[in-house]
Length: 124
Picture 1 (cartoon, rainbow, N blue to C red):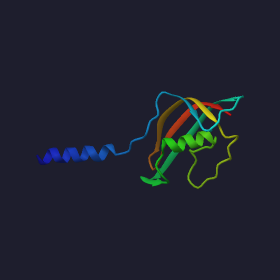
Picture 2: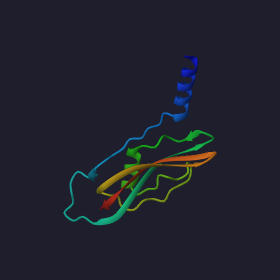
Picture 3: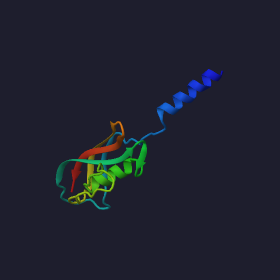
Picture 4: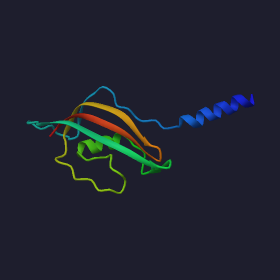
């Protein structure tokens, strides 16, 4: 009994508790109340929401799909190192088509980065 409890506790501690939200099969997201008569596609757009960790301590908030969408709409890089400045985005999107989300993780032993990525076709 004691060995079983110890194995269950080790398993729970080694897997972690992080989960990410996922957006699936999203064909169109509109970010304006009124559609424009003339739409201009600007190509593929990517938005990121990332969290860096040093020695396991998080630097900043956890990555979310919402923040990744906001960064995609404003065409802003969300994968920068905390405290660094980002270049201002171009024109703000009105529509994002064929949206897909995924997650990625980079580990450099002492420094880690976890990201939520949003990709799609941007329309101004």
